[in-house]
Image (cartoon, rainbow, N blue to C red; front, top):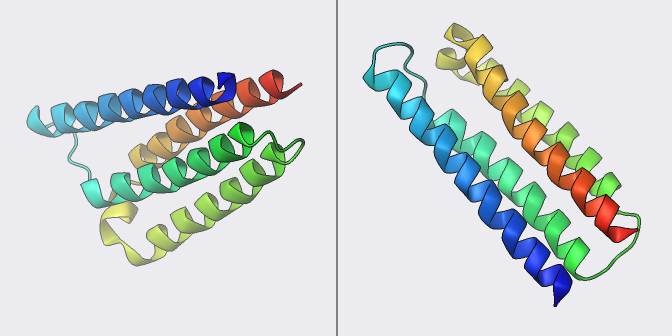
Length: 122
């Protein structure tokens, strides 16, 4: 039960932070600072969400010592997904710095959650 509450709290916190990032992107577009494609942001969001959900389920099932490996696999997958987007999305090429900043923000959020889960697991 304790692990399940940690999972719910972590998932809720991730969703709130992601909503804030979407609001920030919307505000930047409304104020004509920079207009980014929502499809790319949604792709990065869903890859991170799937990664976190996988790690949360593994944590809730109390499987030891594999959260780090899952994290590394998803980091590699997410990096290749960004490369795929970079090759096939013209919009990405025009705004490469903001998209990689977004990628690094989501990666930082993911790292913080992984570190907390690994600490709680020990």
